[in-house]
Length: 282
Length: 264
Ligand SMILES: Nc1ncnc2c1ncn2[C@@H]1O[C@H](COP(=O)(O)OP(=O)(O)OP(=O)(O)O)[C@@H](O)[C@H]1O
Ligand SMILES: [Mg+2]
Image (tube, rainbow over all chains, first blue to last red; front, top):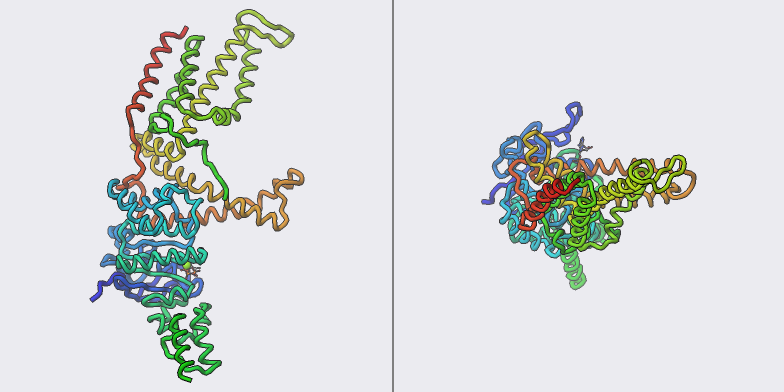
């Protein structure tokens, strides 16, 4: 029923031929249109490498990556793939190309040969969308990290993409910047149906995803809804992931206090509601 | 927050500010050569008057022009003195051993100093009334014909604009590293010179490492956003050639026969 956005068939990749192990080891993955997919895993598990395979910055050694029906190994469609797959990187400073906000948002459109008149129109439209309209002429060193990331998103949105990949895009931001960026992304996901792939160490952030993937040593080791994954937190901690506070609290309440909590109590609200009900039952 | 000004650009609304960078670049470039046509009081007079008119039109405060002149002032003074004392022509004013001051020498010194002054003031006016990015755009546009000779005009302009974009970032970073190294006991501002030069090393090494990391990240980000060189690119920033730009060039062109006629 849903359109397939990304179709990965047993993708293998390594940076150097002499490396003994695959950095990405037989990865298969389908992503559907409009989905919010979170990818987590410890440092060096291959998340960024996977992300770079999705817009053809890296091409598979074995297997295939298909984006909206185009193979990333096909040079001729690479350009169209990069237009429909936008990518926000970790460091806000190192992806800001223009000397001003306007110039930076336009950079992608210039590359793709958008006619100037349309460029100007899309420019104000996408700046509006990320709430950065009043910073048009601002230089990057006068912006906060969160603002820079929102400008990066505006630059991508202006290209009318189908997929946006956030590669730890919020990890260098303060809580305020982080929530601003995520708010914009949720808005884009809901109203424009843009597929979001969010790579993050923050399981709190991942818990709001539709689906979650846990990676370890180049393989997908867990896959499912955040509820499914957090239901069995064993193994996640060993992988160096920090569970969300509510998940830890729920686990402790069950193990130490012997409370009888249902399988759904993961968000703060759900947990509070359950606890209320427990109190009332006594 | 640091207030970093790149280049010398002074925001303003004067007629010079509103001109196309291309006309200003062409005019200044031409004037650097045209100034050499002047060789007597009348022709130098014409050029000085034009320069004064340009200063008035720019509506930039003299303080800023002086600032632009300052680094070159010593050179002008030395040129003046050397020319004044080593040119022997006309009547002697002063004669003592090695030194001869003659009217001809003084005149020659004055001419050459004025020539230098005019050139420096003209280029200063250009940078005072044009943002660095406009200058880059103007240059890219003017140098376009050289693309046929495989001169990487677009790449050059992009390099300039990225450099402009990253200067403040790298300056902030330098400051950060300096503070970090100071906290570790490195002295940047005191101690003997050799010590201070040695202290630069722990500053430069991390700076370079991070600059390379930035370059790598940036290249990746640019590619992800569809950059593939100069192929099929459109531009957001527009250059607008107006009537005043044509007029400026007309003045410059007319100046040539005028000076040729008036020179002695
Ligand atoms: N450009 C490269 N050249 C060679 N090896 C690389 C390169 N980039 C990453 N690697 C290696 O590939 C492996 C996976 O790296 P990757 O950056 O994909 O991990 P990650 O999951 O994104 O980690 P992190 O959470 O730290 O961002 C690591 O072992 C890393 O050392
Ligand atoms: Mg990574």
